[in-house]
Length: 108
Image (tube, rainbow, N blue to C red; front, side):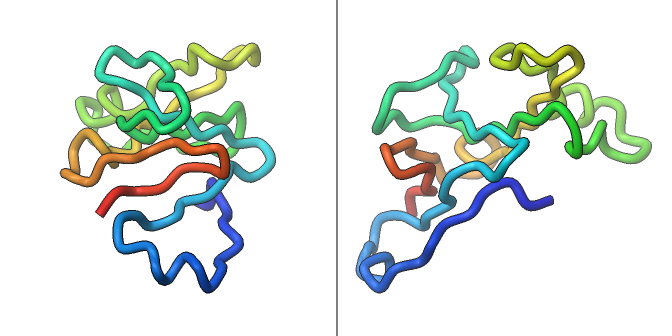
């Protein structure tokens, strides 16, 4: 699933502290949330979640517990049935995500 895009620049190679994830593509939303599922301010560090009203998987095949943990109703969308996917970056993995004015990035 493609949810974000980043226009790579030569300056990205010199950043030893993060890997750009970029901005959401059309029909998707990227959120960096704290442990209480609240939006973080610019430069906040937390978990990357992906929102979409269509085109987002509905769950994991024959894994209802994991589906319930990772696929949630999207509280930030005004579209009925929109879903939120918890990517695991910043929650399951030890690589937190930072939101900046140019998009999201993982912290090495």
